[in-house]
Length: 435
Ligand code: DQQ
Figure 1 (cartoon, rainbow, N blue to C red):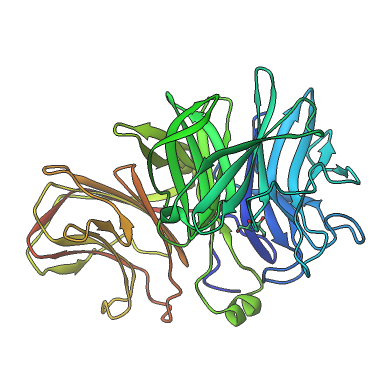
Figure 2 (tube, rainbow, N blue to C red):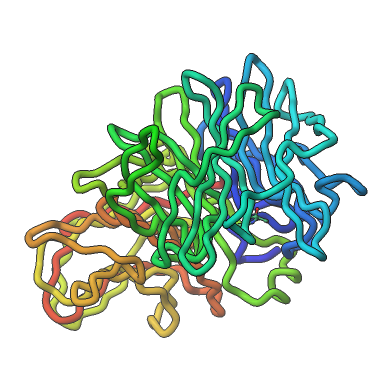
């Protein structure tokens, strides 16, 4: 038993990356990139998990596996799931061969989301001139007059490109030019694009280095970006969304490992599905993200605290509320203090611990850009799950950490203040149960 394996985050038997979420009939489905044979990235399959409450997950049979001699012989890479007239369709990137590397766009169809039949020939074989080498991860949506799809690509030396296609039947696709071309600030290409309306704006998600959000307006001419930023600056990548029957836009990311490849293989599993995050557009065209309220179903024992005042330079461990599967909610009163926050996975002597800090000078939540307004309190929601720590700050910044404590007594929670005093005005801890 690997004591670093999460309790309530979904993990699969071997390797997983890139989630592809889809909602249907009251169920949250997440397909994911999957190597079922060993805990390292290899010939990609589509794994499948389902949840009815966003808190508990059940693994289902593999949806897609590479077919020898076919357009996906060397891997079924990322894509999307859509529904049309009671049938389900996966658009995905097939890798016919890795050397030389080729990418084509493929289609598979199902009546029940479990058993999938592949169309033998790709639906798109060539990438348009002037783009590449990235040409993958199709994401389709329906508009009044037919289907649209973006494929992630790049313009050499400039940045990522989201290439727009149109179709009336999901099979025949016409290329309509780039919907949006980014700059180097969001990486040299766009892996795993996702595109959807949110509030009165549109959001494009792209991945390279981090998953990035681009918020703007979508018109005939394409997508005009108003603002951009990182979804999560930590061990978090390839995030995509679904829309559920409450009209919520819910995001899931791939939580990557940070320990050695050898340690991952020995553990027998690698990668986890992030907690469900509900997205909103905030004033100033910024992306808001909050953990789904359904996650409260994981709560067990509750440890409420009275207000705790810390002096400049003080660091303390809380007298109760310990564990390696916890939810911690703390609101710090407004202050000018340079750096303050929460200690998690701390040993009783604090020698081994993980700091979740807000750095006022560097304007960072751990390492993710985040700035408190003057006189703004800071509410942190922290989900500890053995080697995973997901942190949400004021529902507008998120940072995911991996921590593999060497000592097995790293179970304590604490607070710290540097460069001034700070008061934890409200503090609650819950033990969380299995997912
Ligand atoms: N992972 C997939 C690709 C995608 C990348 C392959 C992103 O389709 O671009 O596993 O992590």
